[in-house]
Amino acid sequence: MHNRTIQVQLGIGAILASAFLLLIAIPNWVSSPSNVPNIILSPLFWPNTLAGLTGIVGLGLILTSIPAPKPVTEEASDVDDRAAAYFRLLAMAIIMALTMFALPRLGMVWTSMLAFASVALLIKTSHPKAALISAVVMPLVLYLFFAHVAGVAIPQGLFVRLP
Image 1 (cartoon, rainbow, N blue to C red):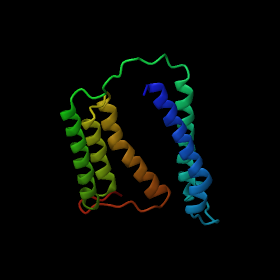
Image 2 (image 1 turned 30 degrees about the vertical axis):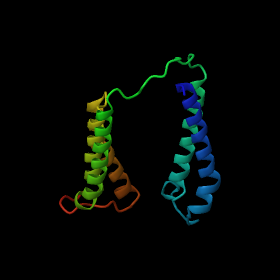
Image 3 (image 1 turned 135 degrees about the horizontal axis):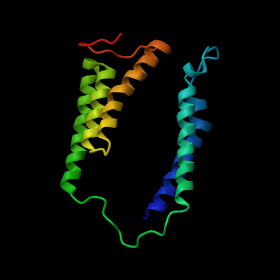
């Protein structure tokens, strides 16, 4: 299968998933009180936003695949070293297990910082500084929004508590 074909199939799948979420899943299975004072705090807002963005990404995948050049005729292998690929898979599983172990002890904010940074280092990102800055800043910004603006309690750890 060629990149263009995969991209179109992923785009169609994303649009179908978005349509399913927006037309069936969210209206039928996400309940929301009618008297929510702020639209952002509604339980329907974020699922609808993510479903809509999924549809937009699917449409973007399809549109960007249109001017793609003709595919290469030979099948190229994505993995040069299978042992390294299995090692990364095992390392990812270990990171996930350690994340679940650390959540009740360190809290959601600190654990997500460590998990994000670990995954960024594992996949050898081409932008390590940006990844490490994002690993610290994004969980803090999300914590500040949900804890102080939305008034939602974020699980804190046993050792360090955020204000």
